[in-house]
Image (cartoon, rainbow, N blue to C red; front, side):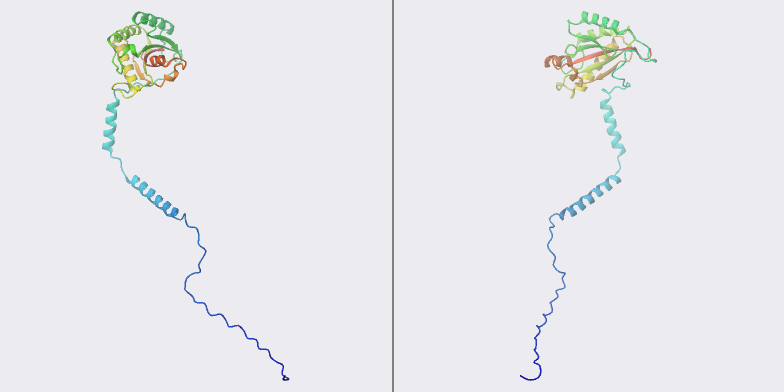
Length: 256
């Protein structure tokens, strides 16, 4: 060995070769983009909605077509719509201060029962007092043919006799038509129209008998069918549901 210190040569590892650059960003972990289509779909729906709102805002209603439609509806409904003002369905027994009182309803009930007894079979019609008014209920089977609104000859004579009693009384009179839930057989598409036309026929007959007060005709269809007792057989309920009520109020006629 020489006197010089032996120098231990340490061989360093060669530097790593330079990386080759591709110019692309580093690859990231893949995401779950399964619902990404909903964003595009929502934008499309919002755009279409905005488009239709804009079209609607720019549109104009054709006045001529609208007036033609309303005129046609007015002509078709004029025969079944009453022009008289509607009155409350329930009235107190005592007239208000600005209404003239009519005859006592108990007295009127006796007159009507006597007239019915002489003109109709027993228990064919009935008279009842309810909510301060007097109801004279006439079954439709005794007044009209099935599906028709015209009074039969015998029914016209009966209603004429009742009108003869009412014309001598100062009480206000209304007529209400009712029906059962079954669909009518005939030219009327609904029970409401049939019940209204029947009520109008009775109201006209009362006017012909000499009652000169205003008679309001109303049609209820089968709206009050549920008011009949459930324990009654269906046949009886249907028979009593098909009726016309002559409603006599405690107040006097209009203008009296």
